[in-house]
Length: 130
Image (cartoon, rainbow, N blue to C red):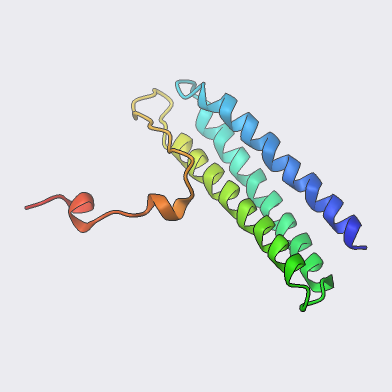
């Protein structure tokens, strides 16, 4: 049963990879009027995949012996990587959704560092100095 869950989870992981590829193509069309609509569709798909992936992941965790620390560490690494990838794609999609049909909003795509490293900002950086 565990191998079946891993296979199904792998299929969803591959779906995230394909979605990332489609997003990369979409990022090249930020000046097109329908880019924001396509980004919203991809975001909905991403949320669906994320939900299904986590459901399978937690079913798999329930099958693992709690004393098997190696297996638990491996599974923690899987979910951590998955969460980082989903966060990255979500940020990139949200950036694309801010683009107006006329392309009036300049877009700077985020780098691919994990979100926790990106959020180091000071009060002065955010609000400026008086």
